[in-house]
Amino acid sequence: MSVKQLPETLINQIAAGEVIERPASAAKELIENAIDAGATRIEIATAGGGKSLIRITDNGSGMDAADLDLAVRRHCTSKISETLDDIRTLGFRGEALPSIGSVAKLTITSRRAGDAAGSQVAVAGGKSSGVRPAPANPGTVVEVRDIFFATPARLKFLKTEKAEAGAITEVVKRMAIAFPKIRFVLSGSDRSTLEFAATGDDHLARMAQVLGADFRDNAIEIDAMREDVELKGFVGVPTFHRGNSAHQYAFVNGRPVQDKLILSAIRGAYAESVPAGRYPVAVLSITLDPALVDVNVHPAKADVRFRDPGLVRGLIVGAIREALHREGDRAATTGASGMMRAFRPGFPSAPVQPAPRTPWGAASSPFRPLHPQPANDFSERVQSDFDVLTMPAARADMTIAESVPNPAAEDAPRYRLGAARAQVHENYIVAQTEDGLVIVDQHAAHERLVFEAMRKALDNKRLASQVLLIPEIVDLPEEDCDRLMAHASELDRLGLAIERFGPGAVAVRETPAMLGEVDAGSLVRDLADEIAEWNTAGGLRGKLEYVAATMACHGSVRSGRRLKPEEMNALLREMEATPGSGTCNHGRPTYIELKLSDIERLFGRS
Image 1: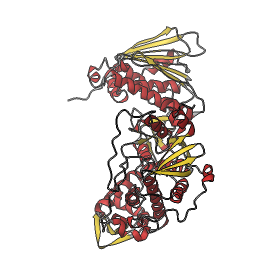
Image 2: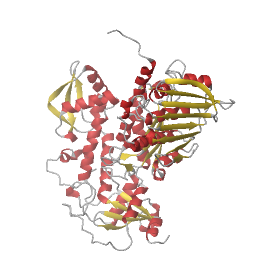
Image 3: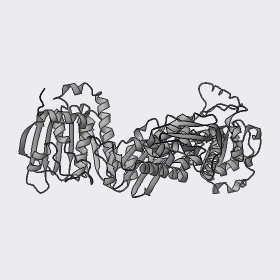
Image 4: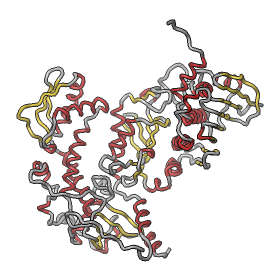
């Protein structure tokens, strides 16, 4: 079979399969072009979920007749010159318009601000009608009709109109967050109008428009830099979370991306602060030299590759954890809103069923049930390391206030969590603050305090290890052995002692005592895989912190235990001094704050 040149139309349709996957892809490319043209107002109109119509109207710089003629040809662009090392625009490949024109009916009408008249070009199924004069306002109007009419097989793989319209909405939201100085309006017969007014340099105001007003009240600012890589943005407090990752937005040099490294770093930063199955809210913007990031990985430009992914991941995790250390113990305002909704004036119409009892005698709560530890539990093996940090069941009657002074009741306004006034159901501490009250889950709160003390111990000394009677030899590729030995000292501090054993193997001589019996081979292989991908050996520390979290759960003040006033106040003071005390180790809130104005509103006094 002889080799032959494919026709231009077929080439464009093949390219369209990568660039234009669905109507939302076309909308994204056209919005990016409008932004690159310097637009300050962008209006998007759709019909049929974008299948029937996508119209993008902007007030950007516009194009003349010569530019229009080139714009619908492949690999014609005004945004780069000769190299891909310094890309500072959203578009640069010169594929979007010809790809759209090859599978849809494309019309572009444009006019420069100083021109007397505008120009128009139409492309249908890859065939151009040529440029002709047309009336137009300064700027550009791009219409895409009947997308995929030239490739009907692609239509079968599109989702419902509602789903496709939702995908376009998500694209507009991402662009709106990235460019707060631009006014976006999204309208059409398939949706209600959505408008994002320009907010100038107030990025948080734009985020509140997109993510809701609650985000402004529950956001923590991020501002960090490491080796010329700058990270800015806002993240939610740990108790402000959602049911999926759709509320996590990432931008690299202003470009919206959906990069697995960034999403993984966000997940790692909130590892023990957010409940399983829930996702933190975050908006992160990374700025770095364009030569240090490759945005040319895929025609859709949603993926990027960093020259030093370990640096970027470490910066994200470190900055978020520092922010949570600084302000992460705040209670989410949504907790008070939920409490307000739970209250109803008057009496319930049906009798309230008593809550089931736990083995400890207290009413069950959304927290995990606690169970007695067996005599040979791992916590006993490492009790010598943490004997001053844990509170085993045998010492449960000891006061937690021995080393913390008890404030006088009249001094309560001086403290953020106030002064304890009562204990309800032997588990919830009610404290009075200057402008409201706080309800604390005593077990969850003390669990976090014990865990943070254990985590501090992990940082301050080499962990106890158990020596293997016969060292375990783990066969690995030579490059994995090299990576592991580069992190050998870090692993040794965590109780894992390894040595090189020939070119393609390592010998494991000691394993962390906290882990008890462990499959050393699997542990080392997992660490090698992690180092290969992220250039970090954080997985072992994660395992150790998981064990510490379990020990903290078993060693904390139990639900059902009566506390003295000085013990309750001591717990409140320790919470105020401990980073991340707003959530327990499993990510659930440790306290809920209710303002006096909310209480008065419940009784109709405001």
